[in-house]
Length: 109
Image (cartoon, rainbow, N blue to C red; front, side, top):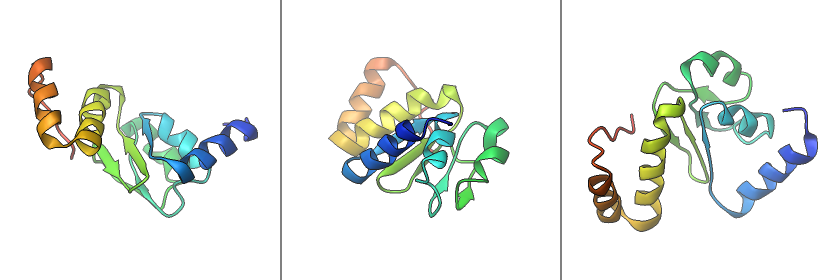
């Protein structure tokens, strides 16, 4: 979080595309100034730190604020991947991928 060039690169990327972060990655988005006006989530153990960067920290597994999507702890990674599949390719495609993975616990909230 000390590398200003990297943080600026992240912030510029969000102007052009959707940016997603998982677990402690939410802190990088926060340090880049991308969460000041947004709700965000992270690993529960990091929520106190994230409060310094985000408008509001929520306990949801996934928080979609348009071009910035944050997710909870590392086990939320599968849910985030499926969520992004649904957002990009549609819910029908997401459901097919989920079935192929034999993943029954897809949770967003």
